[in-house]
Amino acid sequence: MIARLLTALALSAFAPLLWAGEALTGEVQRQPVNVSAIVMFVAFVGATLCITYWASKKNNSASDYYAAGGNITGFQNGLAIAGDYMSAASFLGISALVYTSGYDGLIYSIGFLVGWPVILFLMAERLRNLGKYTFADVASYRLKQMEIRTLSASGSLVVVAFYLIAQMVGAGKLIQLLFGLDYYVAVVLVGVLMMLYVLFGGMLATTWVQIIKAVMLLSGASFMALMVMKHVNFDFGQLFSEAVKVHPKGLAIMSPGGLVKDPVSAISLGLALMFGTAGLPHILMRFFTVGDAKEARKSVFYATGFIGYFYILTFIIGFGAILLVSTNPSFMDASGLLVGGNNMAAIHLANAVGGNLFLGFISAVAFATILAVVAGLTLAGATAVSHDLYASVIKKGKANDKDEIRVSKITTIALGVLAIGLGILFEKQNIAFMVGLAFSIAASCNFPVLFLSMYWKNLTTRGAMIGGWLGLVTAVTLMILGPTVWVQVLGHAQAIFPYEYPALFSMAVAFIGIWFFSITDKSTSAADERARFLPQFVRSQTGLGASGAVAH
Image 1 (cartoon, rainbow, N blue to C red):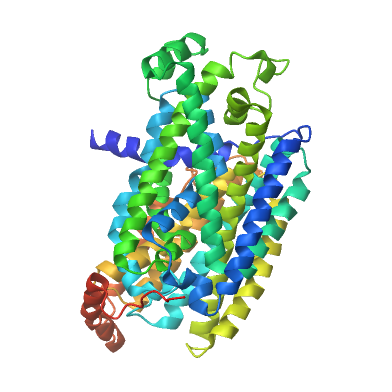
Image 2 (image 1 turned 90 degrees about the vertical axis):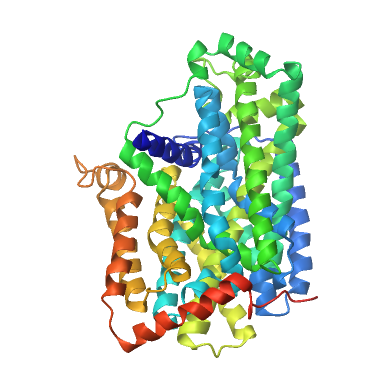
C-alpha cells in the first residue's frame, strides 16, 4: 500500500513537467504568420523594456541588482515565483494531457504541488534569515567558504545550463508554431531580450516581468475556463458527461491510471521534482528579495495558491478542448488529427472561445512566459559566478559592489551567447529529459548540502564537499548511461543503466556520502564547524543578525 502511495505521489509530481516537455517535442511545422500575436508580443516586450529601464535607475548597489534591495512584498514575490512555475510548456502540456487522457490530468497536475509546502515551508524562513544573495551564502555559513561556494556555484551553473536549454528549445518551437517565424530567429530573439532584462534591470526588472506575465497568463486561462463553463451552464457534471460522449476513449477518460510504465523512473523523477524545487538557484534567489522571514513564508503561501489555481484552470481548459476543439473540423487536419499536434489544444481553444485577437494574446503570453523564466535563470547563473566565485572565492570577500556587478554583466552576456548556441545545438532534444536532468542535479547536489547545512549539526566541509560532488557526478553519469543518452543520442543497442532518471540513486549517494564523510571527520576544523551550528540555528529561527530590506 505504502509503495503504491509513494508511486502515485511520485507520478503525480513528475507528470506535469514530463508532459510539459513533451508538449514541445517532435517535429514542428511553421505556421502562417499570426499578425495579432506578433502585435501583442511586441506590445508586451515594449512594456517590459520600459520596466527594465525603470529598474535600471533603481539599481545603485549589489543588493539592488541581485535582490531588488529586499523590497519585494510576500504577495509580489509569491506571484513572481508562481510566474517561474506556470510556464508555457506547463500550460500547453497539462491541458494537452487532459485533452488526450482526461481525469489523469487532474491527478498529475495537482500532485505537482506536493513538493512546494513540504520543502519550502521547511526552508523559506531559514534561507531568508541566513542568506544574502544566493543559497551558497546559507550552505557556507558555518563551513569553509571557498570549497562550498565552488561546489554550490558549479551545481547551480550545471542546473541553469540544462534548464536554459529546455526553455530555449521550447521558445523556438513555440514561435514556429505560433508566429510563423524561423526556429533560429526565435532562439536569437529570446536570447537577446533576456540579456537586456538581466543586464540593465537585474532582479527588480526580472521580478516585475514575472509578475506581469503571471497576471496575464492567469487572466487568459481564467477567461478560457469561464467561457468553457458558460458553454455548459457552469455545471461540472454536464462538462464531464458531454466530454465522455465526444471523446474517442469514452468513459475511460474519467478513470485514473496508466500513463507511466516504469515505477522506478517515476519515483526517481518524482523525487527529483519535489526536492529539486528546493535546490533550483533561480527559485531560491527569490527568497532574498523580500524584507524578512515573515514575507518569505507569505511568498510560499501565495505561490502555492496561484500555482494550484492555475492547474485547476488547465484541467477545465483540457476538458473544454475535448468539447469545443475536437468537435470542430476547422481545427483538424486531413488525417483527422489536431493541427499542430495535441499540444496545441489550449491554443485552438483560445481561438474557439475568443477569436483571433484572443488567440494572439494567448500566443504572446505563452512566449513571454518563456522569456521571463529564461531571464530569471540567467540572473541566477550570473550571480553564482560573480557573487560566489568572483567575490567570495577569487577576491575572498574583498570585492566591491561595482566590480561584482561588472563580472555579473559579463557573465550574463556569456550565458546569453551560450544559451543561444545550446538552443540551436539541441533543437531536436526532448525537453522533458533536459528539465528532468536539471531537477535531478538540483536534488542530488544543491538540495542535500543546503538542507543538511541548516538541519544537521554534525555536517562538516569534508562531508558536504565529497557527498555533494558524488551526488553531482552520479546524477550526470547515470543520466549518460541511461536509455535517453546511451541509446537514443549515442546509438548503442542497450542502456547500461536501465532507468531514465537517476535521482533515486544519486540522492541516496549524496546523502550517504555527506553523512559518512562528516561523521568520520575528526579534524579540529570539523569540531569548530559543529560548534558553530548553535549560533547558526539561533539566527535561522530568530533572524537576529540577518540583513533587512534596503529603503529606496
